[in-house]
Amino acid sequence: MTQKEQRQKARRSIEAYRPQDEKEAVEKQVILRAMDSFENILTRESALAHLTSSSWIVNPSRDKALMVYHNIYRSWSWTGGHADGEGDLLAVALREAREETGAEVRSLSEEILSVDILTVKRHVKRGNYVSAHLHLSVCYLFEAPEDCALTVRPDENSGVCWIPFSQIAEKVKEPEMLPVYQKLMERAARQGL
Image 1 (cartoon, rainbow, N blue to C red):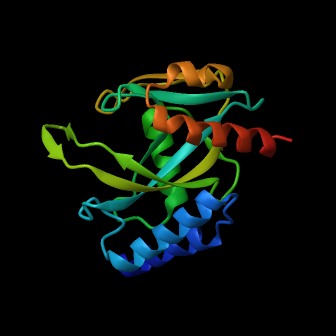
Image 2: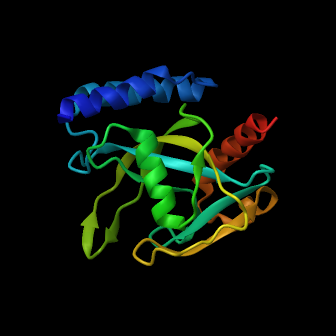
Image 3: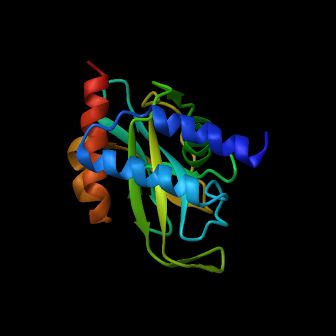
């Protein structure tokens, strides 16, 4: 599949997403405009902004999230990563979730759960300087059994564990992510009904 076809595939999934509030409606439109403006939006070569795909992994009772302790952000975090040229954003999120946790997660829906534009602070990754930029993020809802085997991915995280929804605010050290996680907790609980 060509890069243009990959971009079109990603665009179709984002176009199909129905925003659930004004913030998401605006951010969805900004993401679509960025996709029109940057040919390499699916890769990190797009240094100002690029697409990422994350997952919100819940237990069957929808009261815990499987999170990783992210080495760069030094905080408990959802799983996810860069599209790296791939237009199937659900596949990206699924691959990243499995790689980062070791869990055999399954998708609860092929539809996007949330869209967000996230600011990434400048940092050093694997010895290379990365300037501040935007992650044009889509997130999917996944499920895994609480008793599944978990593994740490040392190049990216130093911990993997189930965190009760009631403890996420105290565990997460990135205040800008708390509204995102709150939104995901609420949506995951609604999908469990």
